[in-house]
Length: 153
Image 1: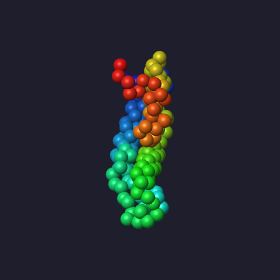
Image 2 (image 1 turned 45 degrees about the horizontal axis):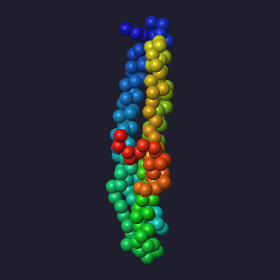
Image 3 (image 1 turned 135 degrees about the vertical axis):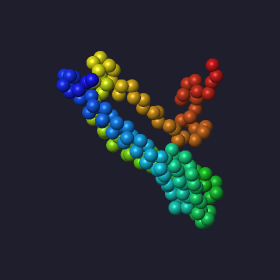
Image 4 (image 1 turned 60 degrees about the vertical axis):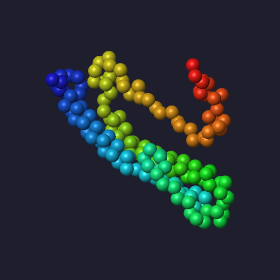
């Protein structure tokens, strides 16, 4: 059994206890994140969109007075704008929840510090790509910008 007395520079039991605390914290953050909701209001407070933790629209409200100051043709753009703002807001709130877990994880030793010659798994972390909010058919989504997109091979 590995202990601090083995000369490895760490106490295995302490490391395992820290890892267990980290997993408990992650579960709690995931539970709290799943309950997040956000909303955004645009068009002079006449269009409101609510989203869940994944940024999925769960409710849309259109004030009956919308047409007093706005054209019906503009409604879809306002709904899109509010949905994107609400999704960005809930994403920021989710990231804020995760920050405490990241800080605690950074305090744990890396695998390479525990096992001589092992890779540092943090080097393999996957960073998600930024997801476009551009509408279909926009220049940002064109196949010219993303070579090979939309082609079968």
